[in-house]
Image 1: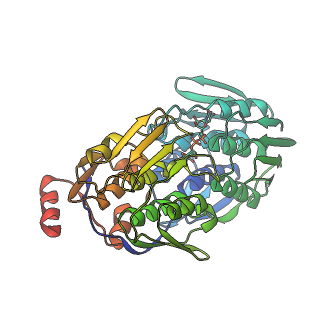
Image 2: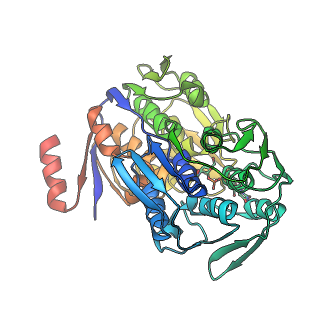
Image 3: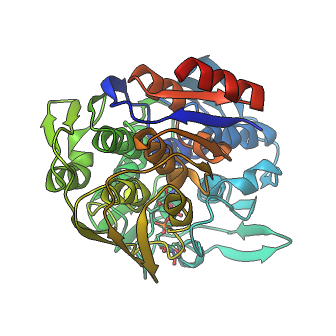
Amino acid sequence: MIQYAIKGGTPLVGEVEIGGAKNAALPILAASVMTDDTVYIENMPDVRDTKVLLCAMESIGVMMKRTDRHSVALNASNINSLVVDDESIKKIRASYYLIGALLGKYKRAEVALPGGCDIGCRAIDQHIKGFRALGAEVTIEHGLIKTYAERLVGNHIYMDVVSVGATINIMMAAALAEGKTTIENAAKEPHVVDLANFLNSMGANIKGAGTDVIRIKGVPSLHGTEYTIIPDQIEAGTFMFAAAVTRGDVTVKNVIPKHLESITSKLLEIGCEVEEADDCIRVVSSKPLQHTHVKTLPYPGFPTDMQPQITVALALSQGTSIVTESIFENRFKYVDELTRMGANIKVEGNTAIIDGVSRYTGASISAPDLRAGAALVLAAMAADGYTTVDDIQYIERGYEDFHLKLQSLGAQIELVETEKDYQKFKLKTG
Ligand code: UD1
């Protein structure tokens, strides 16, 4: 089994280039089926989730050409099936973006029910409510969501919960519906705005993305475009916290500092220095880390996808901190692994009460999901001694070349496959 082998204790120092946002790339790739023209996408992260989605799109006849690792040309003029039932597609959450995209263009879609990280109940009632409000029939049969509409007609849709996925899915279908759609209580995440910008660059008429009311005037068809995906807020935030926990000095490059405000403000609160420039942020961690409280919230609040990373930092901070998870109810599963590394954390419902300890010690641990997996790697880099991390396929879902980027900052981390590889790593780093 491939694992990360990590020797902790080295402060991370240097600059790291942040890639395109996974959570923007997924809906943008899916939305490229909404035109018969060719769509050129740049700054696409080369991670497992985008690869799985591209494979599923290929399986229904989308033609694609990778011009380099981060650029792809897509042409959906010869789609031969509206049924996406690829085995691998069930593993990624974003499979459901193909429903909104195909329903908008072809008024029909059948897509395997989504999987994704096991971080709590991940309902899709708001997606279904939105499709129905636009006039589609929606049923769930044999593990597929089946949608069909004679006509899609714009409507006023109030979202009962703020949902990134539902906002995106409804926006895609409504872009090609007849008349006007209003989405109230919409998600405001940067990737929602990026998808709206992408659709507008294809000729859609979407206003208000980034606020909680999105207004869409349906258009009859969309055309080709060239589009560059925004930088990944969560990858950037993860490296910023890597600097904090290893007492390092890291500059994340190619970022949009505005998207990182909630993360920056917590780093300042716990005692890091943060310097912002136009498209980069430097984090220096030279003083003992201090406790704080944090509650995850929809954007512009502190992202749930950064909750494990800040918990890893707070568990090494002086004093008692409280982390409240308000988006997903099952997102503290990694705490058991962190406890095995010496953390002192008590979880009660959606709250973690953290008594800071002065150090972690290396252990043999597993990544329970994507973001928690990355957070545990940060803990391992801050720990005394050696750690192995299993189930790194979760981490590869959303981080491109994670261990290589960490190595470039001085981390002692390698991929190992056998006990012999691990012993070699220990000899080399001992
Ligand atoms: C997306 C992100 C994920 C991030 C999350 C919150 C992608 C591929 N994934 O997930 O990384 O953690 O946003 O920022 O972009 N809900 C319902 N009914 C629905 C839909 C959602 O009750 O129909 C609830 C969910 O159970 C959850 C909350 O709404 O409690 C937020 O979920 P949502 O914003 O939809 O998350 P995802 O789009 O799945």
